[in-house]
Length: 245
Image (cartoon, rainbow, N blue to C red; front, side, top):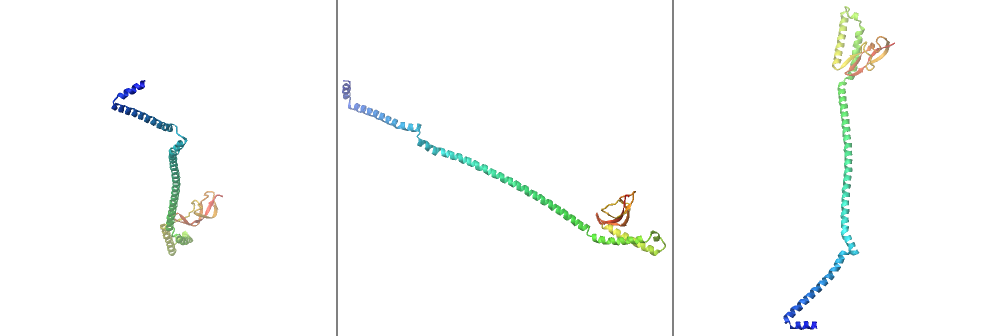
């Protein structure tokens, strides 16, 4: 009865009101259907997001994790390469330092050897200039010995005798001997070997021994004088050496 009453009341409404009422009802129904459909579509998406499947997890791992691992591997590889390069550079530096040290030692040795060679060469040149006349000086020593022997032949008392010829001869020999020794001195030739001077085996040749308790290790007699050219003995003095009995 209620439905019939409402139907009769609706039938009494004008056609315009019925049209708008029907339109509103249909719009509400359409909106409700759209809402239900939207909810039904949104629920699977929510489940997919909230509960990922195994394939989705594997896909995420393969696409997202691998680049991250590759980036980490790339970073670690880069650090390893830098470390290897640093080690290689350190080894090369040590090798270069060792090579520099070796070359420095070689240079120092070469300089020392060069300095030694230069010093030896300089000494040889100086000796060559200083002792260039050794052979000539040795040959002149025989002349000096002959003049000395000639003077010793004439006794001292006869030199003062009235024989002018003998005196002139002796004076000539003495003058020649003095001039010869003057020339010797000019060129660095020095005579040595005197009685009572200390015996030196580097300067004296002992031909015989003379027992003497008062003056042992001295020259007791000079047989032949010795000569030095500068600091080099060119002829040792031949002497009789005193020794303790």
